[in-house]
Image (tube, rainbow over the protein chains, first blue to last red):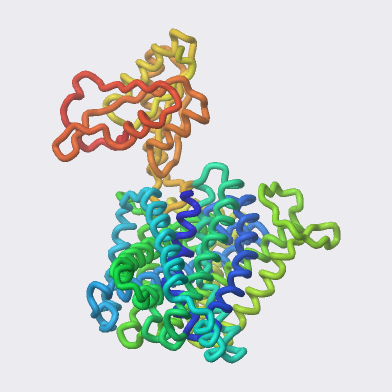
Length: 454
Length: 151
């Protein structure tokens, strides 16, 4: 349950902003884009289930990739993951104020106040994580249960009070995007499904990860697909896509509650969604900080990031350098919000660039390990395989690899912001990696160091 | 009756007497004593993170209880565990090792001016798979400050 809650806390939180980002490009085809990306999500979740059950380490997909292709590929996957964690921090923090605007309008209407509040949230969580305040998994489990119940209630109430097939179909058809935008919408929709990595990271903390992680992943697939499908259909029943993509772009779920025609339900739902979305996004921001600090430390133990980044604070026993550095980068990504709120979709694309690269690595690693290490114990093994030279190759991982690669290329071609920031990030990482290699001048397989060592 | 006794130690004043008591109880039944020191790992780090200073501190605590056990002419097994929280680590170890008794030494602690058992002891009392004995050393009945123990 704790693993499921951690994963759903991340994936479930993305519905609070992904819907608006997808609607910005896919318009009427938003439910279609989310549905197609959902199929891809199933393939990716299966890949993670096999990898995590076989290699239950804190590095997640970076660990599978390192095992399959060595340190350089492991570094690339880990560095890409770091990007997606940084953007998770930024995008989650950036969407908290619009939801809280139910209580105080300037959070949404005044970019300075909204962006300032987002930055304050990141700094607050940065301090909390440096000090290392205790957090029990019960908080996550409680928030996840309330979140699922509220989302399900919203979908049910929305279907009863708002759903009108003829209106929905006309809104989809009248606002059908160009082929390019549809494909781009599918690409952007992948941001809705990026919590898998968090579950993979938690594998080492669970009892019997070989059973609990695949089970949690399957539970998450079902919960996420049902709720995302429901909410996307209800949203287009509630309002036209252009409104979803403008007025409610950063708080689409609040928009659905706003359009519930029964006043007594609306009076309850609007503040509930404001508080709940704020809480879940706050947890997601924190999960991003925890995720990146754990990943950095894990990469550090293999000598794949500068040792300073995995330095542990003498008193608080937390990786304070990594927390400070990555929180500051996350804040830097939020700063343009002071001047232009429409950079929101750019953040979404950047998020997808990092996570798709990590997904690609994970699919490729699973396929490679099937070839290189066929005898490796696999407590969870993906079915539906094709046999190539005596090896079982999972078809879902092959499709997943091709699809994620195509979507990744498409994003790079169509999104200048994410192309330059994303590729710049990867280039910076490679430079750091090469410098590290040059400094150590040791064979790669000897790069096992203890980050606490000076 | 007590064939395998688990003694969580945390560097408090009660450790020495607790381990001696465990040795005496174990001798009666020709049992074994297992002393564990728990390193809590913050959530910002992977659970298997090796923090040298914390591991050394835990090993020093175990060394001192081994010395105390030697005085009782008793050989004990020691182990350093890493966990997010102390209570669940003790209970999990008790289940995994099939221990017949958990013997916990506690120091006098105050929270908001009131005597407090902390978080780990109530958790173990609630979830333990075996009998639990709490030992509070005579004379430790006053506030103890600056101790590293978390039990």
